[in-house]
Length: 314
Ligand SMILES: [Zn+2]
Image (cartoon, rainbow, N blue to C red; front, top):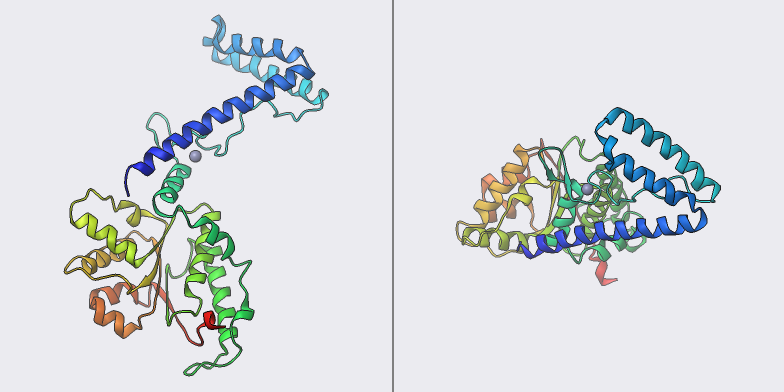
């Protein structure tokens, strides 16, 4: 979680603003080449905005309104869209500055999202594009009933896919905020996590997705006083933790931080999804009762036991 990410994102936003301006200037030149009267109108606009009469907000506003109507007419008769000369922003909320609010400025949600991406998941985009609900292929799951189950593996995965899709659609108004997927490797847990993550990122939620291994590393760094900022983990709309149990347990560090993280997220009504190869009794053995009561608590968590054949063997 180095500041290098912050520097990159700020540079990116500044570059975006420059690109917006250049693009607008280019559109202006093109429009003037088709309709020279627009240049005159632009001079008029600037003198209204910055000239001697600009202090009279009412009069200036009225005159500008009139001018914009005239401009739209000229643009249309030149065969251009009415809003051709307006600045085009990727984020209308902050106009690509990364800040919202006046006079107190705070980071725009688009900035926070971009920063989290840069910090935590720079390489995930390609995977998330491929591993989506749209591409979910039930055909890879065998049609047999796995031992201990009543439902064929494929049918169970169909139900699970629909539940996850529903979860992503209802988010954040879910009846239970947390999901836990457990079962052996190769049953599709990570794929499901990716589907939900991608869907919610597309819906512009602040989603962080990590392996438990990385989470453990962040906590250890924090514990060692490396200046690591864990607050994004606490504040994200959704925290997705894959492969719980694969991380090394550092004495009095990993479990303490994990319990505090999951607990705090529950208190803040933030959603958490965990996938693990551990069975509930193994979670209990490895992390203790306090972790179990946060992770497996039936009031807040829906849990799903995936059974069957490792589909990667097919
Ligand atoms: Zn924004």
